[in-house]
Image 1: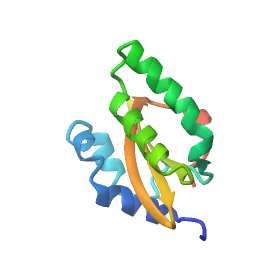
Image 2: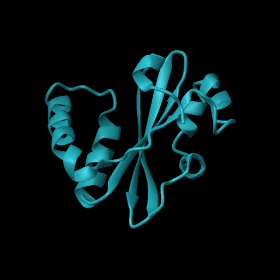
Image 3: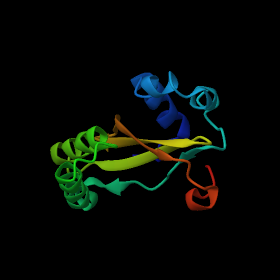
Image 4: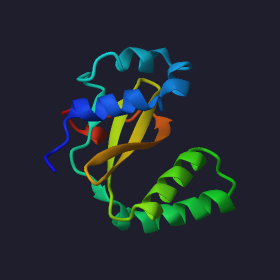
Length: 134
């Protein structure tokens, strides 16, 4: 498959409605998603093969459950379940980096079909850690 365009990622994310609960609470995110090429939307070009990161994420999930860590628990469960079901998929990340918080949308590519999986949230990520937007 040819390289996916930023527009394809952006369209898939918006049409999935996965960001709706966050839009209601974060007006900055609502503004950000009006511009697909906004410099605070980071489209990471290189996917990670699911089978390479699944073992690490499974261990992380086990630790989260054992220590009763709720932050991103459901998103991690969704991502692990997706990777277990589709071990040959490619996992992509699109990060919407707002001033106080970021929203990392994980997507999977299976048979040339893009699937929006989950949203991982956290604090603002300094630009130097994200690199340039593309």
